[in-house]
Structure formats: C-alpha cells, structure tokens
Amino acid sequence: SAVISQKPSRDICQRGTSLTIQCQVDSQVTMMFWYRQQPGQSLTLIATANQGSEATYESGFVIDKFPISRPNLTFSTLTVSNMSPEDSSIYLCSVVVESNQPQHFGDGTRLSIL
Amino acid sequence: KQEVTQIPAALSVPEGENLVLNCSFTDSAIYNLQWFRQDPGKGLTSLLLIQSSQREQTSGRLNASLDKSSGRSTLYIAASQPGDSATYLCAVWGSNYKLTFGKGTLLTVNP
Image (cartoon, rainbow over all chains, first blue to last red; front, side, top):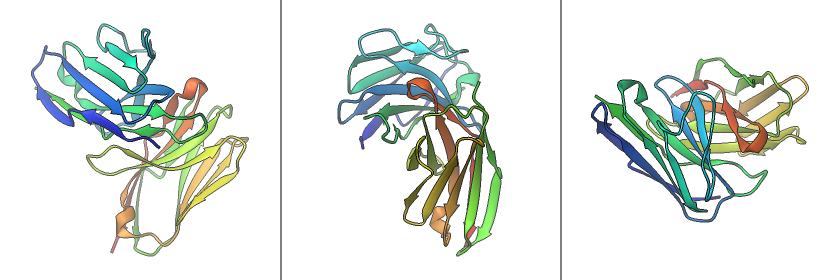
C-alpha cells in the first residue's frame, strides 16, 4: 500500500480567495485522482491528475475552477479557485499503486468558505 | 452512466449481531469493486477489493461478495462490535481506474 499525506487537513477561507491542497505519496504511483465530498453526499471524481500533462476533468468540473498539477509520480496539487460557500466540501486525493490492487485515499482536506 | 445504490442508508444493531450491507450497480461492465469505511471527520479506509473475476473476498470478520451479472455486492460483518460503527461505502471501478461511489450505509453498533 501507499502512505498518503494531504495538506492542509482543514481550512476556513474567505469568499473569492483560492486555496491549494497538496497530496504527497511515499512511493511512485501509477495514477492519482482528486475527489470531492459535499456535505451529506458521497464522493464525486473531479479529475485524473496526469504526470507531466494537463489533468483530465470529469463532466461539471473545469480547469479554471480546479487547476491541478502533477509534476512527478509522487506529488499532486489541487487548487480551488475563486471560492464560494458552495465549495465547502472535503477534498480527497486517491492513488493507484498497481492495477488490481486497492485504491488508497488521503485523509482529506475539510474546506469551509465563509 | 454508472449508478451505485446502497441499502440501507442507516442501520443500528446491538453488539454481537451479524449484519449485511447491500450495494447495487447499474452497469455490470465493471473492473473491480471496493468496499471502504469512513469514520467521522476522517478519510477512507480500504476494507476489501473484489476483482471482476472473483466471487468473494474475506478479511477477518468481513466477507464481501460480488455478482456482476445481477449488479450486486454484499458486505457481511460477523459479530459486530462498537468499533465497527462508521459509514461503509461501496465503489465500483470503471475504465481508467475511476471510482463511482454509493452514498453509503451509516452503521451504528450499540454496546
């Protein structure tokens, strides 16, 4: 398995600001993903973080709102831009170490926008 | 579009009881199915992964089954304990390792 560190663990932000969330893995991984969990809801995939190229976004999510970087095989960032109260959620990164092995998640970033 | 449904949404049982959580999915063309638990304010902990070619997986008091043709999976918890109290999430693997989640079952095990 992999040890995943997400930072920050929580934050309270002002409307209109941006926050960058970091996801660090202790080993090289094949795939990295970013998910959102809105209050009382299950997880929804935001995008696949591609190493060395632009992320692949799911329907309803755009690069201008959620820019993602993945400079190497162990690290990725998700930025939540121009935040509004509707962005209050838990944001989680997940990794695939090997195909047909369990996917693992970080502890998440709990984001509240005032 | 894949849809995943978990029943029941919430379950409260006395300690020691055996219980079954249900998960159904609409598209049987899945690669794998994975069960997670989520404790309040925490991330996801992987419990069991069932590959598409498998029928079941076991880990300790947990047993998960998969019937792809009927689009169903069950998570069986034997001899439940208060420490099992959490939300249990079912997720199916689609193409490119993308996960589609159900809304979860909130389990409370009472001492």
